[in-house]
Image 1 (cartoon, one colour):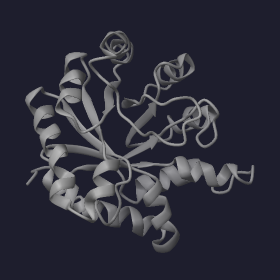
Image 2: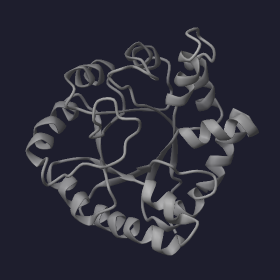
Image 3: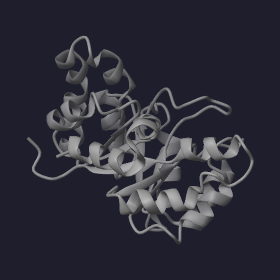
Length: 242
């Protein structure tokens, strides 16, 4: 059992998608982010993509001074525009994700040994500005060790495989994540997780992963809010992390 509470960072990309679909300002992204914090979330996550199809760069700039919890910005540091934005906004954390341009959603972590030279170069760029650096990785001990070797502060375990296998065999689904979490602890890395975590699979994950500091949840939480309401949903997710 972990001793500390895992923090819930809510990814608000899908709220932006809904707003953008009509071109106006409904729902109001900034108000939603502030309300999500009021409802009990301990962080707000955004993942601006180059095509700005959900979160726009202007949103990130507008959110930064308003948020009271930890701001986590995800994206691909191979895009100069992204790096410049993060250095300008100075969030608490940047999560580096190896997305291709136009990718629907993140679907793989970094090959940290193969990308070591690039990561070693880019991580200090953020850390110099006091920004914590988390690297998105698959649940592999080798990838976690590679993240430690290039000087990351944390890894974010990519949980899609866990979510897919959970209903059939929870023990099998979580096994590689437990191993990766132990390796993170051994190498002194902080531990985050995210992607397809939901009300059904979150509690089991949080209870079995030692030292889990933060989960980032967007699509499932926003979808659940259609049924349960946003305030109630944020509290239901926090309840799963107790």
